[in-house]
Length: 252
Image (cartoon, rainbow, N blue to C red; front, side):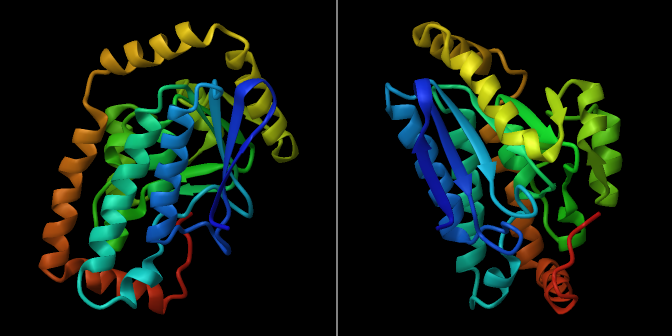
């Protein structure tokens, strides 16, 4: 199963992504994340959501191989729509969302984590947006929530990655823990939020979104327009074909 949602103790809902080998989600997976978040938002018993993943890493972005084996632009359009819906559903979820990040968090993974309210990461976690190397654009909106502006540009232009430890120095990662303690740490933190008055916490989530300096979903949607341009120009196909031919190596 690509995405599974389960209720734990005291109103903590856990949404787990599991799509081997690297959690590069197919189109259906992105929509499944969005559906799970909307379900959580509509459930009065849910007080906080933990978004986590099984396997070697949190998320490696979209399934480029699915995109390249699908004729025309349908897979691209659906993947872009799916990412948009998933990120938006996390950001607009009526309760706080805690991302528990292990291993690699790349491309769409940064979109997921950057849309959430709190990030707790394993000591093996690293983050990056390799879109420039893929002939596309996107998730700069979410990376900008994690790093200062000039570092954002340096990382984005070069497709370099940054460690969870470094992000913790900026305050965008709340806590870095050993890999075998990640789930425990995320659930403990989520439990702390869940113990608060849910009426106040939901109001706080809405208020914090309301004072955000940018409209996050709108900003990301603007970015996607440039991806469409690069695809229509044939640039993105060239880079995705190279990626598939290389065996789909992860950025480091």
